[in-house]
Amino acid sequence: MSLPTLEDHTVHGLDRCPQCSVANPLLTLTGKADLHSSDKVQSWWYFTVKCSKCGRVSLMFGRTRSSQSADGAIIFQIHPEMEVVSDVLPLRAKKFLQQAIESRHAPDGALMLAASAIDAMLKEMSYKDGSLYSRIETATRDGVLTAEMREWAHEIRLSANEPRHADDDFEGATPEDAEQVIEFSKALGQYLFELPAKVKKWKAQATV
Image (cartoon, rainbow, N blue to C red; front, side, top):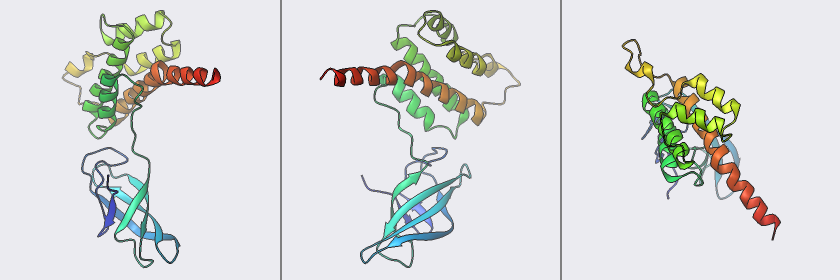
């Protein structure tokens, strides 16, 4: 897989914005690139770029063969890093959550995808009856979820058939709405699947 590059003050070869995850982003240099260090072979540069969609700035680190300009720099570090969902999650949940993360620039879609990820996780835990919200309630009563996670679910109103979506006054989800549900689905995945997998691995290593 080829690395992205900085050419003519624009980043090329990066599929998504590191900030909002919009596809095929227009990321342009802000200000001047700064020379970090240089030797006889190559130079290292750091610079910031701005997304035309979300307006947020990302920090990038690249290298060139020239100490005079960052143009043509091969970018090998990006902050924030592109977020990738753990392979430990069930396949459907992983797919929905990754798509939600990559859809942050479209809050309505991101919210629904994150809710689908939560739905898939609970179904994997054998909670398949009723609405998403009622299954969260049942999982809490069974001790599968903590009281704090239940309260979080109440706060962000995690119903698959959210009443406000049918309300004539509802103007769409905000980025904050989507981020809350994404963060909940990430936390749920860590709690239900990632942490148990790590504990199992640690126990296996301890018995070797």
